[in-house]
Image (cartoon, rainbow, N blue to C red):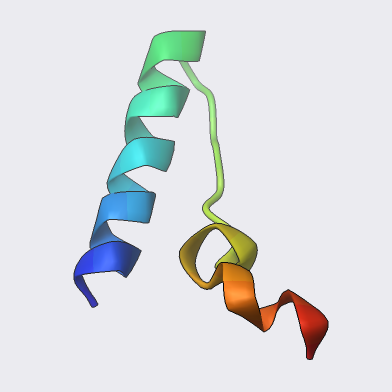
Length: 38
């Protein structure tokens, strides 16, 4: 759960840094890299 919150937080700050009215999404690959082979 902590990793999910941390990843969402990074996406939030990425959107803030790229300018106003921006959206960035955190994908499951960023949260669970081992899930890519499924």
